[in-house]
Image (cartoon, rainbow, N blue to C red; front, side):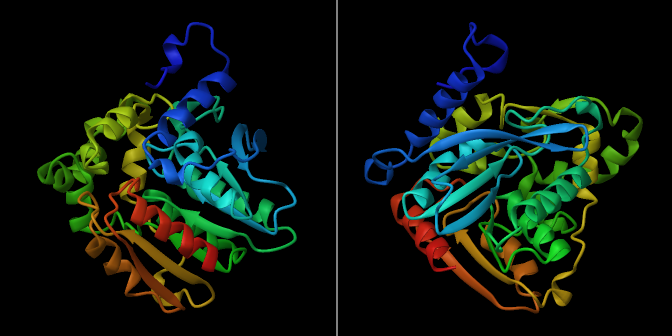
Length: 313
């Protein structure tokens, strides 16, 4: 099980991260567990007054490079199994821990807001795209974040997203919230609570995290993971996320290709929510369904399809 940050009994950060990666990989079918495991290293990227933890999976001399952005409740360790599958097929994958998650060091956590994620993702993409455009991937909420970073910068030719959730949509708010009523009321309530923006609350109080997978043990792991789904974030982050919009609306997004590789059995954010944004995209696009897969894909058919799609991008 995950070893929480607050009670690690003296374990080093590297040891803790290794345990977390092993736990998530354990939910993948044995045939999809890379053997031997690919090279993995941690580095730190200075952004403003933050130290962003970046996990790099695969050989630095790999023919292709990718960036993988996690969603709310994720972090580099939780995304490691997917990065590893791409690494053994010739990618080097950079997975940054977004502010508030994973091992990224934030001096003033109470001030984290969703625009920080948008600006950091765009700046990170620019910093990685010095010689060639990487494949930009986004999981869950990270899908829209990847789209936004690509359209802000023009530094990625292709975005591969498992979800394109637009929080401005009333239907999206109802589905992602713990209850539909909370989804309808969250915006007004958070606006009223604006003086308490710096107060941190567990994500599970607001989000329907039980919809992440039909595998109860996986959901339990995510919710217990204090680097991810068991984390707390400022109310101001949640409020600013619900008010967020991409820098470029889909009707003006002509320059990038967007591949929506959506889990077919996602009961938390069904594909219809992503289609409402995806169908408006003006540029080249492709919709691929990941068979049998839930919101966090661990099912063999869906994961294999996801890797195949990434290889073809």
